Image (cartoon, rainbow, N blue to C red):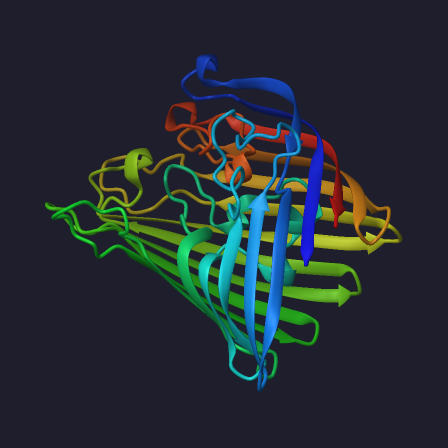
Length: 366
Protein backbone atom coordinates (compact mmCIF):
# COMPACT_ATOMS: atom_id res chain seq x y z
CA UNK A 1 0.00 0.00 0.00
CA UNK A 2 1.20 3.51 -0.87
CA UNK A 3 -0.03 6.28 1.43
CA UNK A 4 0.92 9.78 2.45
CA UNK A 5 0.03 13.28 3.55
CA UNK A 6 0.55 16.79 2.24
CA UNK A 7 0.23 19.42 4.99
CA UNK A 8 1.29 22.88 3.80
CA UNK A 9 0.25 26.49 4.43
CA UNK A 10 1.17 30.09 5.25
CA UNK A 11 2.18 31.06 8.77
CA UNK A 12 4.01 33.74 10.73
CA UNK A 13 6.62 32.88 13.38
CA UNK A 14 8.19 35.19 15.95
CA UNK A 15 9.91 34.90 19.34
CA UNK A 16 10.30 38.27 21.05
CA UNK A 17 10.87 39.58 24.56
CA UNK A 18 14.24 37.91 25.22
CA UNK A 19 15.69 38.60 28.67
CA UNK A 20 19.07 39.38 27.10
CA UNK A 21 17.58 42.05 24.85
CA UNK A 22 16.16 42.45 21.36
CA UNK A 23 19.40 41.29 19.71
CA UNK A 24 18.36 37.77 20.77
CA UNK A 25 14.77 38.07 19.50
CA UNK A 26 13.39 36.56 16.32
CA UNK A 27 11.26 39.13 14.52
CA UNK A 28 8.03 38.02 12.87
CA UNK A 29 8.46 36.47 9.45
CA UNK A 30 5.96 35.05 6.96
CA UNK A 31 6.68 31.45 5.92
CA UNK A 32 5.34 28.90 3.50
CA UNK A 33 5.67 25.89 5.78
CA UNK A 34 5.41 22.12 5.58
CA UNK A 35 4.29 20.27 8.71
CA UNK A 36 4.71 16.48 9.00
CA UNK A 37 4.09 15.69 5.32
CA UNK A 38 5.07 12.15 4.46
CA UNK A 39 5.14 9.37 1.86
CA UNK A 40 4.92 5.76 2.96
CA UNK A 41 4.90 2.17 1.79
CA UNK A 42 3.57 -0.69 3.89
CA UNK A 43 2.57 -4.27 3.31
CA UNK A 44 2.27 -7.76 4.69
CA UNK A 45 2.50 -11.40 3.61
CA UNK A 46 0.35 -14.18 5.01
CA UNK A 47 2.66 -16.91 6.32
CA UNK A 48 -0.11 -19.24 7.45
CA UNK A 49 -1.49 -20.20 10.87
CA UNK A 50 -2.35 -16.57 11.62
CA UNK A 51 1.25 -15.32 11.20
CA UNK A 52 2.13 -12.41 8.91
CA UNK A 53 5.35 -10.78 7.78
CA UNK A 54 5.00 -6.97 7.89
CA UNK A 55 7.07 -4.03 6.66
CA UNK A 56 6.85 -0.23 6.71
CA UNK A 57 8.90 2.53 5.06
CA UNK A 58 7.79 6.10 5.80
CA UNK A 59 9.68 9.22 4.68
CA UNK A 60 9.19 12.87 5.52
CA UNK A 61 8.58 15.10 2.50
CA UNK A 62 9.00 18.89 2.45
CA UNK A 63 6.43 20.15 -0.03
CA UNK A 64 7.48 23.76 0.64
CA UNK A 65 11.11 23.46 -0.54
CA UNK A 66 11.77 19.94 -1.79
CA UNK A 67 14.83 19.85 0.48
CA UNK A 68 15.61 18.14 3.76
CA UNK A 69 15.69 21.36 5.80
CA UNK A 70 13.29 22.74 8.38
CA UNK A 71 12.01 26.31 8.70
CA UNK A 72 15.30 27.56 10.15
CA UNK A 73 17.17 26.35 7.06
CA UNK A 74 18.92 23.67 9.08
CA UNK A 75 18.57 19.93 8.49
CA UNK A 76 15.35 18.30 9.63
CA UNK A 77 16.23 14.70 10.46
CA UNK A 78 12.65 13.53 9.78
CA UNK A 79 12.85 14.40 6.07
CA UNK A 80 15.10 14.12 3.07
CA UNK A 81 15.94 10.41 2.94
CA UNK A 82 14.05 7.16 2.41
CA UNK A 83 12.73 5.88 5.72
CA UNK A 84 13.51 9.15 7.52
CA UNK A 85 10.31 9.05 9.61
CA UNK A 86 9.58 5.40 10.32
CA UNK A 87 10.55 1.97 9.05
CA UNK A 88 10.50 -1.60 10.23
CA UNK A 89 10.21 -5.26 9.32
CA UNK A 90 8.77 -7.92 11.58
CA UNK A 91 6.23 -10.60 12.37
CA UNK A 92 2.63 -10.10 13.49
CA UNK A 93 -0.08 -12.34 14.87
CA UNK A 94 -3.55 -11.58 16.20
CA UNK A 95 -2.94 -13.96 19.11
CA UNK A 96 0.68 -13.06 19.96
CA UNK A 97 1.04 -9.43 18.91
CA UNK A 98 3.75 -7.85 16.75
CA UNK A 99 7.56 -7.83 16.94
CA UNK A 100 9.48 -5.40 14.71
CA UNK A 101 13.02 -4.14 14.15
CA UNK A 102 13.71 -0.65 12.78
CA UNK A 103 12.77 2.98 13.48
CA UNK A 104 9.68 3.44 15.66
CA UNK A 105 7.72 5.89 17.79
CA UNK A 106 8.53 5.64 21.49
CA UNK A 107 6.96 7.66 24.35
CA UNK A 108 5.73 10.75 22.51
CA UNK A 109 2.47 9.67 20.82
CA UNK A 110 -0.78 10.01 22.78
CA UNK A 111 -3.28 7.87 20.89
CA UNK A 112 -6.88 9.13 20.70
CA UNK A 113 -6.40 11.45 23.69
CA UNK A 114 -4.31 14.06 21.79
CA UNK A 115 -4.06 14.06 17.99
CA UNK A 116 -4.11 17.79 17.25
CA UNK A 117 -0.51 18.26 16.11
CA UNK A 118 -0.04 14.69 14.93
CA UNK A 119 -3.03 14.36 12.62
CA UNK A 120 -5.25 17.45 12.49
CA UNK A 121 -3.37 20.72 11.85
CA UNK A 122 0.14 22.20 11.72
CA UNK A 123 1.17 22.53 15.37
CA UNK A 124 0.04 21.85 18.91
CA UNK A 125 1.41 22.32 22.43
CA UNK A 126 4.22 19.82 21.99
CA UNK A 127 5.15 19.73 25.66
CA UNK A 128 2.46 17.00 25.59
CA UNK A 129 5.02 14.85 23.78
CA UNK A 130 7.93 15.50 26.15
CA UNK A 131 9.35 18.69 24.58
CA UNK A 132 10.63 20.98 27.38
CA UNK A 133 13.04 23.93 27.51
CA UNK A 134 16.55 24.38 28.99
CA UNK A 135 17.65 20.87 28.03
CA UNK A 136 14.90 19.21 30.07
CA UNK A 137 13.20 17.41 27.17
CA UNK A 138 12.67 13.67 27.54
CA UNK A 139 14.62 13.21 24.30
CA UNK A 140 12.82 10.00 23.31
CA UNK A 141 10.42 10.31 20.39
CA UNK A 142 10.93 8.71 16.99
CA UNK A 143 13.90 6.45 17.66
CA UNK A 144 16.31 4.58 15.41
CA UNK A 145 17.56 1.04 16.05
CA UNK A 146 14.47 -0.15 17.92
CA UNK A 147 13.26 -3.63 18.70
CA UNK A 148 9.59 -3.18 19.63
CA UNK A 149 6.92 -5.58 20.84
CA UNK A 150 3.24 -4.62 20.65
CA UNK A 151 0.89 -6.89 22.56
CA UNK A 152 -2.56 -7.92 21.33
CA UNK A 153 -5.52 -6.19 22.97
CA UNK A 154 -6.94 -8.10 25.94
CA UNK A 155 -10.17 -6.68 27.35
CA UNK A 156 -9.23 -3.27 25.95
CA UNK A 157 -5.72 -3.37 27.48
CA UNK A 158 -2.54 -3.20 25.40
CA UNK A 159 1.19 -2.72 25.95
CA UNK A 160 4.20 -1.68 23.87
CA UNK A 161 7.77 -2.45 24.99
CA UNK A 162 10.75 -0.91 23.17
CA UNK A 163 14.51 -1.40 23.52
CA UNK A 164 17.26 0.54 21.79
CA UNK A 165 21.00 -0.19 22.07
CA UNK A 166 22.55 3.23 21.78
CA UNK A 167 26.31 2.80 21.44
CA UNK A 168 26.73 1.83 17.79
CA UNK A 169 29.06 4.74 17.00
CA UNK A 170 31.33 4.44 20.04
CA UNK A 171 35.04 4.39 19.24
CA UNK A 172 37.78 2.01 20.26
CA UNK A 173 38.26 1.65 24.00
CA UNK A 174 35.08 3.56 24.89
CA UNK A 175 32.24 2.19 27.00
CA UNK A 176 29.24 0.83 25.10
CA UNK A 177 26.53 0.66 27.77
CA UNK A 178 24.22 3.37 26.40
CA UNK A 179 20.62 2.20 25.92
CA UNK A 180 16.97 3.27 25.98
CA UNK A 181 13.95 1.41 27.33
CA UNK A 182 10.38 2.44 26.69
CA UNK A 183 7.05 1.09 27.92
CA UNK A 184 3.54 2.14 26.97
CA UNK A 185 0.45 0.83 28.77
CA UNK A 186 -3.00 1.74 27.48
CA UNK A 187 -6.61 0.83 28.16
CA UNK A 188 -9.85 1.86 26.52
CA UNK A 189 -12.90 1.48 28.77
CA UNK A 190 -15.98 2.62 26.92
CA UNK A 191 -15.66 6.36 26.38
CA UNK A 192 -12.57 6.64 28.60
CA UNK A 193 -9.10 5.97 27.09
CA UNK A 194 -6.22 6.02 29.59
CA UNK A 195 -2.49 5.45 29.24
CA UNK A 196 0.95 5.62 30.81
CA UNK A 197 4.24 6.11 28.97
CA UNK A 198 7.69 5.52 30.44
CA UNK A 199 11.10 6.04 28.88
CA UNK A 200 14.59 5.81 30.36
CA UNK A 201 17.77 6.67 28.51
CA UNK A 202 21.30 5.90 29.71
CA UNK A 203 24.31 7.53 28.07
CA UNK A 204 27.55 5.62 27.72
CA UNK A 205 29.57 5.68 30.93
CA UNK A 206 32.34 8.28 30.55
CA UNK A 207 35.97 7.63 31.44
CA UNK A 208 35.45 9.96 34.42
CA UNK A 209 32.21 10.76 36.21
CA UNK A 210 28.79 9.15 36.30
CA UNK A 211 26.52 7.84 33.58
CA UNK A 212 24.00 10.47 32.39
CA UNK A 213 20.40 9.27 32.70
CA UNK A 214 17.09 10.76 31.52
CA UNK A 215 13.75 9.44 32.74
CA UNK A 216 10.35 10.41 31.38
CA UNK A 217 6.85 9.70 32.69
CA UNK A 218 3.52 10.55 31.08
CA UNK A 219 0.01 9.89 32.39
CA UNK A 220 -2.94 10.58 30.08
CA UNK A 221 -6.69 10.17 30.29
CA UNK A 222 -9.55 11.18 28.06
CA UNK A 223 -13.33 11.36 27.82
CA UNK A 224 -15.00 10.88 24.44
CA UNK A 225 -18.19 12.60 25.59
CA UNK A 226 -19.85 12.39 22.15
CA UNK A 227 -18.88 11.25 18.63
CA UNK A 228 -16.10 13.49 17.31
CA UNK A 229 -15.40 15.05 20.72
CA UNK A 230 -12.60 14.40 23.23
CA UNK A 231 -11.53 16.06 26.47
CA UNK A 232 -8.09 14.94 27.62
CA UNK A 233 -5.79 15.55 30.60
CA UNK A 234 -2.04 14.90 30.54
CA UNK A 235 0.70 14.99 33.20
CA UNK A 236 4.39 14.66 32.37
CA UNK A 237 7.62 14.52 34.34
CA UNK A 238 11.20 14.47 33.15
CA UNK A 239 14.23 13.77 35.36
CA UNK A 240 17.83 14.49 34.33
CA UNK A 241 20.54 12.79 36.39
CA UNK A 242 24.31 13.29 36.25
CA UNK A 243 24.41 16.09 33.72
CA UNK A 244 21.91 14.63 31.23
CA UNK A 245 20.48 18.12 30.62
CA UNK A 246 23.68 18.92 28.73
CA UNK A 247 24.81 22.34 27.57
CA UNK A 248 21.46 24.02 28.32
CA UNK A 249 21.43 22.89 31.96
CA UNK A 250 20.35 25.64 34.33
CA UNK A 251 22.70 24.27 37.02
CA UNK A 252 25.72 22.19 36.04
CA UNK A 253 26.51 21.73 39.75
CA UNK A 254 23.32 19.72 40.34
CA UNK A 255 23.35 15.94 40.03
CA UNK A 256 19.58 15.71 39.46
CA UNK A 257 17.10 18.11 37.86
CA UNK A 258 13.40 17.52 37.22
CA UNK A 259 10.43 19.30 35.70
CA UNK A 260 6.73 18.58 35.27
CA UNK A 261 3.93 19.73 33.00
CA UNK A 262 0.17 19.41 33.22
CA UNK A 263 -2.49 20.39 30.74
CA UNK A 264 -5.78 19.82 28.99
CA UNK A 265 -6.61 19.18 25.34
CA UNK A 266 -10.01 19.47 23.65
CA UNK A 267 -11.56 18.70 20.28
CA UNK A 268 -15.21 19.03 19.27
CA UNK A 269 -17.06 18.71 15.96
CA UNK A 270 -19.95 21.00 15.03
CA UNK A 271 -21.09 19.86 11.61
CA UNK A 272 -18.04 20.00 9.33
CA UNK A 273 -16.09 22.28 11.70
CA UNK A 274 -13.78 20.86 14.35
CA UNK A 275 -12.87 23.23 17.18
CA UNK A 276 -9.48 22.61 18.85
CA UNK A 277 -7.84 23.97 22.01
CA UNK A 278 -4.97 23.12 24.40
CA UNK A 279 -3.45 24.65 27.52
CA UNK A 280 -0.36 23.47 29.43
CA UNK A 281 1.49 24.81 32.45
CA UNK A 282 5.16 23.99 33.07
CA UNK A 283 6.34 24.94 36.61
CA UNK A 284 9.94 25.80 37.48
CA UNK A 285 12.71 23.22 37.17
CA UNK A 286 13.56 21.72 40.57
CA UNK A 287 16.76 20.28 41.99
CA UNK A 288 19.16 23.21 41.60
CA UNK A 289 21.90 23.55 44.24
CA UNK A 290 23.16 26.91 42.98
CA UNK A 291 21.14 29.77 44.47
CA UNK A 292 18.36 31.06 42.16
CA UNK A 293 19.51 28.87 39.23
CA UNK A 294 16.04 27.29 38.92
CA UNK A 295 14.18 30.58 39.31
CA UNK A 296 12.02 31.74 36.39
CA UNK A 297 12.28 28.46 34.47
CA UNK A 298 8.54 28.10 33.90
CA UNK A 299 6.19 28.56 30.95
CA UNK A 300 2.60 28.40 29.78
CA UNK A 301 1.85 26.99 26.33
CA UNK A 302 -1.49 27.01 24.51
CA UNK A 303 -3.20 26.75 21.13
CA UNK A 304 -6.60 27.46 19.61
CA UNK A 305 -7.73 26.51 16.15
CA UNK A 306 -10.39 25.14 13.89
CA UNK A 307 -10.44 22.98 10.80
CA UNK A 308 -13.11 22.51 8.16
CA UNK A 309 -13.37 19.03 6.68
CA UNK A 310 -13.96 19.22 2.93
CA UNK A 311 -13.97 15.40 2.68
CA UNK A 312 -12.73 12.37 4.59
CA UNK A 313 -9.23 13.06 3.29
CA UNK A 314 -9.01 16.85 2.90
CA UNK A 315 -9.36 19.76 5.31
CA UNK A 316 -8.41 23.41 5.68
CA UNK A 317 -7.57 24.98 9.02
CA UNK A 318 -6.51 28.07 10.96
CA UNK A 319 -4.49 27.94 14.21
CA UNK A 320 -2.75 30.11 16.76
CA UNK A 321 0.02 28.62 18.92
CA UNK A 322 1.91 30.50 21.63
CA UNK A 323 4.19 30.00 24.62
CA UNK A 324 4.88 32.51 27.38
CA UNK A 325 8.36 31.82 28.76
CA UNK A 326 9.66 33.09 32.09
CA UNK A 327 12.92 35.04 31.96
CA UNK A 328 15.16 31.93 32.26
CA UNK A 329 13.26 29.53 29.97
CA UNK A 330 13.26 28.84 26.22
CA UNK A 331 10.38 26.51 25.30
CA UNK A 332 9.90 26.56 21.51
CA UNK A 333 8.29 24.71 18.57
CA UNK A 334 11.37 22.64 17.81
CA UNK A 335 9.61 19.46 16.71
CA UNK A 336 9.54 18.74 12.94
CA UNK A 337 11.87 21.67 12.28
CA UNK A 338 9.02 24.17 12.78
CA UNK A 339 11.07 26.77 14.68
CA UNK A 340 12.84 29.48 12.70
CA UNK A 341 15.35 29.85 15.54
CA UNK A 342 17.25 26.59 14.99
CA UNK A 343 16.70 22.90 14.40
CA UNK A 344 16.50 22.45 18.18
CA UNK A 345 14.53 25.63 18.87
CA UNK A 346 15.48 28.74 20.82
CA UNK A 347 18.97 28.78 22.33
CA UNK A 348 19.47 29.46 26.04
CA UNK A 349 20.69 32.96 25.10
CA UNK A 350 17.14 33.68 23.85
CA UNK A 351 15.52 32.66 27.14
CA UNK A 352 12.52 34.80 27.98
CA UNK A 353 11.47 35.18 24.35
CA UNK A 354 7.87 34.13 23.69
CA UNK A 355 7.40 32.13 20.46
CA UNK A 356 4.09 32.36 18.64
CA UNK A 357 2.84 30.99 15.34
CA UNK A 358 -0.38 31.81 13.51
CA UNK A 359 -1.18 29.74 10.45
CA UNK A 360 -3.68 28.95 7.72
CA UNK A 361 -3.14 25.63 5.97
CA UNK A 362 -4.47 22.68 4.06
CA UNK A 363 -4.02 18.95 4.64
CA UNK A 364 -4.68 16.18 2.14
CA UNK A 365 -4.28 12.52 3.05
CA UNK A 366 -3.87 9.91 0.34
